[in-house]
Image 1 (cartoon, rainbow, N blue to C red):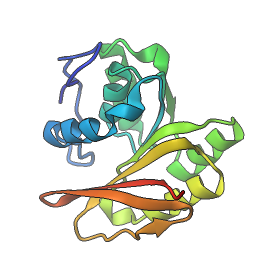
Image 2: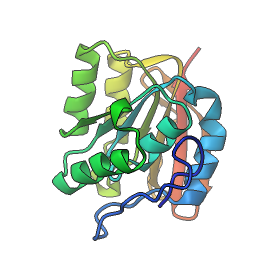
Image 3: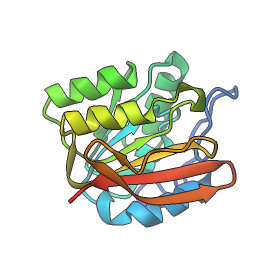
Length: 184
């Protein structure tokens, strides 16, 4: 795993020793950032189920203003913090060591408006729709913001969840990236 471009370009990020975390591959990450590039500069990003922090760190490296890293696994929290240090982006990253629902509610209470919300939960949790509903109900996404959900190809997400509609979907073997924006 490495940072593809930006201020931390080429930095090698630490990965877990086990199969618990599935870091987004460089190929998928590069395609993802080609799509969301217009949203990244000066953005506030939320990286749910951050694992190693690779997506949020890539966004910070490309000019995002701030990133919130959400994960409730102890090893992941350590990896995220260490990877922020490696990329020299620690001052722009806030690690929230709680479950995603609690973290999103906490961010709402702090009046955070995210430009990009990325989520890659363990596939067996089947929680994406519920998290998008929380984001919708609490107006957590900034105007013109985007939600990206990485999920297994056996999971079909609805075309509309709350006030958000699916505007794009990309298939990469057994992985799908679904993109949601506010319905206008």
